[in-house]
Image (cartoon, rainbow, N blue to C red; front, side):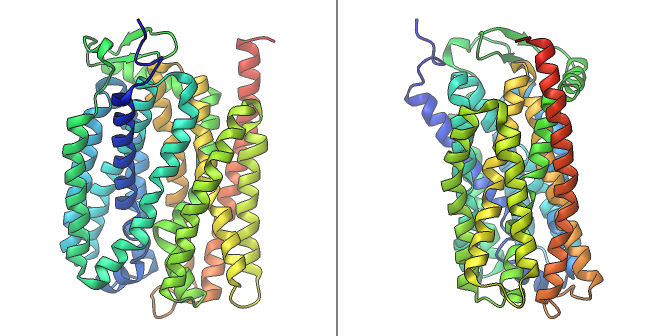
Length: 438
């Protein structure tokens, strides 16, 4: 008998496609303030630090939820988690649609962050449960690439809808989209293939051996977290995800559009075009990075992750040091550099999948995924504080020089993350050599 895992059929691909579309919707929700940051500052009468808090608290909730979400995924599966995540995001966008005070807006972003936290790890769970292990690296990269199309929706159509109608109509529409996908995902996605339909709900399946492990109690969940974090491969994944995507996340989530318009002096159409290029560059670079990661698994950190970090840092330094507004070609290079962070961050999940037993995979994935959003939280907060310290905390006082110095506060995060990657890479090599001698 040929297993569903050995030869995925149309139903399996449909499950994955619905999961990926749910991830696109979660990205729309996550980045829904990206092209309307100036509008948000005016609506809420918020300075730079207060505006940063919308994104910072959202990312803090996202990061804090990663480990609980991973533990719950290992116990209950992807179907209820994706549906619940969509409902929470819908509630958050509905609150945002009618919010007119900073406190209410922050509550909305808390709900959005909590719902968003459930989607990507759940889609990874679908891949691990329904597909053979050899397909996983490519599917994870494709999931990340396609999901980023949600940023284009947030940058262009959502901003156009807001300016053509109203704040309430725009964010209410996003809430309706999330409700639609809550129903769709719950109707279509299943936790396990048909041949495993009789498995208990609180089981996890090793997709390579078919072995089933029952998660019996919260004590098992706590032990799963300790065992996952104790492995240097998990920590290598955490620091890889911490270091690679945060600059692009901070740019696309909040500060990119104000920098390009109020700082660099570009018109809204050109700024939107550059931010769209960020997504398109990610789509192009993702398969290349994914292919190199598959062909050279022992050199992922040295050949892919660390060079990506250096590329982003150098690009920002050049833009910050440029006399006067940067030329468009240099901003395009910056977009390309930042776009490589997302595909490179997917390598972190390859580390988790490679070194973690399947019954702890979602827990390890949650730990890894939390790293990037912790760094993005810090980056957004540092940029906002730096703008306020320079007296450029509101749209009326934004300046190019203030933005340049503010974005350089990302350099310490790259430095700390890069050092940690080098350290954990060495520990992982020694651990694997000790476990599997040549």
